[in-house]
Amino acid sequence: MPTCGYPECKEDGVQISRLSPEGFLVATGSKAYSFREAYHRFHYCEGHHDELMTSVWNRVRKSEDKDDDHVAPTAI
Image (cartoon, rainbow, N blue to C red; front, top):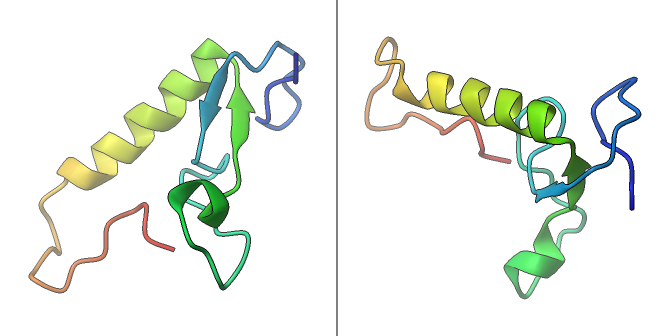
């Protein structure tokens, strides 16, 4: 089993995610035909996956400085 992709973590990466350790989706190429081909996959331990998801949702839910042109934190 792959190890957790979070820096310096050596636990098993039981969760597969499209989020980088910084909490953003990461594209691997310019020409993609499906979601699977478009984004790199990361493995995380349960704790670090939960931490990343909490971070992303907290940024999405903040209402300050948002207008119709707001870019989501998962944007490339």
